[in-house]
Amino acid sequence: MVLVLDRPRHEQGIAAIRAAGARVRLIPHGDVSAALLAVTERSPVDLLWASAARRRGSFSAAAVKCLGGQLLGGLLAAR
Image (cartoon, rainbow, N blue to C red):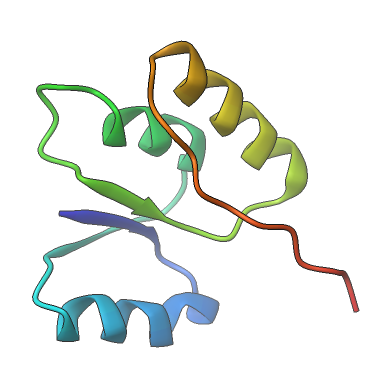
């Protein structure tokens, strides 16, 4: 299962995830807590797919690292 923030900017990503055969669960907010679900052993969540502000991304990365998980990400230049 892939958690994705329910935002118009994620429509193409959601379509690609579903085309790959994964289940998608849309969430209205909570990308930091969703990142923790992705690294929690008993959680049905396998992956969080999101584009977040730097601060929330940094919080997520720190929390995930503390739990022994990995965060794959990149920075995009602002236009």
